[in-house]
Length: 318
Image 1 (tube, rainbow, N blue to C red):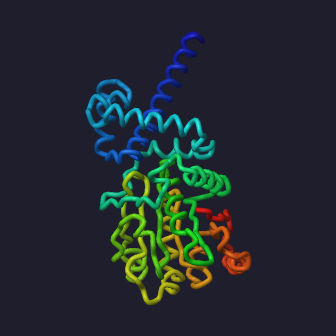
Image 2: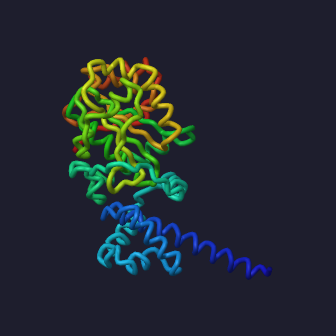
Image 3: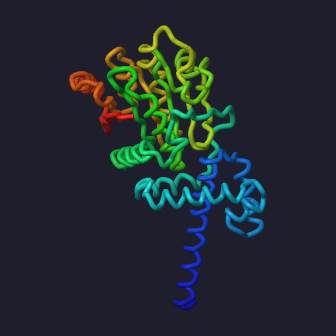
């Protein structure tokens, strides 16, 4: 084979690889923006393969996507690339993860509420800030073994901890990474409300009787699952400090790429400390013009006993 032929073959291989990645980005955008179900995506891919056309052409051919929807998806992909919505670390992770095309759930889906801005307004200022925070967390936990597990702690209530935890979980899932969002606030849980999920069975029941956790799929984020807190328990600190919770975290570390865990206000309850110990990584949160320096300092002092690593601190302005 001549050098010229080898070069042509390499160029054709690169074109095919780029076409595959572009198709994946378009399909991700269609699922995110228009909640295109997995069955429709699979049908379009099959048509693209049989007709030997691009994913975009097959989407129009099958009638599952309109020209307007396709144009919006393509525009979204171009904006993401132009605005550097994901960095080098994120891009490498996305390419590694999306090719697995793993179906994570088969049960009921829940829907992100309008409060979760990232799920509905990707160009919003908050969405840009969340993607930047996601990149920071990726860089600070690079080289890890197993899933990146983050416990979210804040001193007081109404500082935006649950919303930040939920939106960052969506952000990680948008990379094509298997992501689990866990509500370990067994006192005043809020994540189920942010997704419109039933909360009768959840983490508390799995810890109490050893049953398998009941998780929900999240509409628009096919790589994401939600584990709610479950019905109120009389002994939440004991449940989160026990061996069953440690075993669950160990299982999540093997099964997911990212796990984000919400906790109750640390100045009121100590539940976040065993969660931080099991997770290993902590993201601290305070609210601008509300959270005092003294309560944050006290929380950092408490965290020293857990040997968990604070990998990020956020001052919430939203």
